[in-house]
Length: 326
Image 1 (spheres, rainbow, N blue to C red):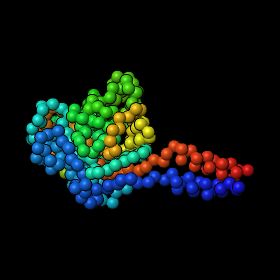
Image 2: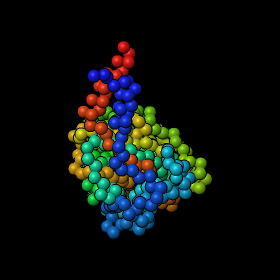
Image 3: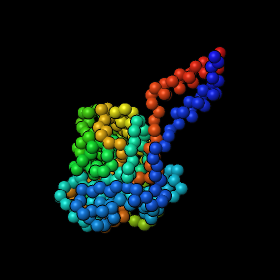
Image 4: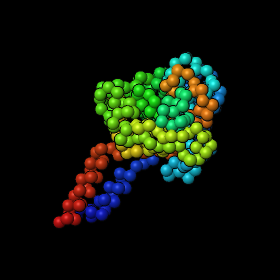
């Protein structure tokens, strides 16, 4: 029996290992009716300005001076807001926010969730303005029918980070708990030392900082001066990936490892995005309602081939390459 040609083996490997898209949403059309909105404020809806948290699934972010996300043909995306100015904090505590999940999404097997995220806050940049420290989050392994906000509940495995680096815990991992995982768990790429998930850690300062507000945003809001602090991830489109293989979940941003959770909590088959405020009170900055948010765009979930399949295909490709060398 002849071995398959090297080119044929590589073509087969590429074709079979190419990811099958399980879900996608670029928010270029209004898909509000296809999402669940959850909030920890009684009577709150997704509309901006009613009770404190908001989700806009068809937001034109060019209206605040932000250019299209990489690969996007429009400037429409999902805008998430928490603790909007002038609305009462119902508990007087932090961790006030909302989450959203696609209706009826059921994911099985191994997969990767990919999307672009932009974290905006009211300036001046660097330390940020009044109450500017919010967390943008994403997670997997949830039912999609309940809220996923720290302080309320996080049932699956989730990751989040602040935009301004203004927390003592700027990079966050959650594993089946509404409380952030300790660095001692080994979940963080920055190490196990206390405080290593703070933006001032060398791991994060090597990746983030020095970003300015877009010129178009600065023209609209002259207070958006300065640049992000070292280690702060705001004011840039970031490419997130959450990879599930078995019950190990890995978090990458811009291709850089941020966290790995072994023994991941995955009781459900859906995903979520969330925005939460770490502050007990609302911002006093009148511009925060326009400038304080997390953006999500180009959401895609892809199937990951089973390891056995990848092994067989890899061996076939290797054998073909060896034959070619002979």
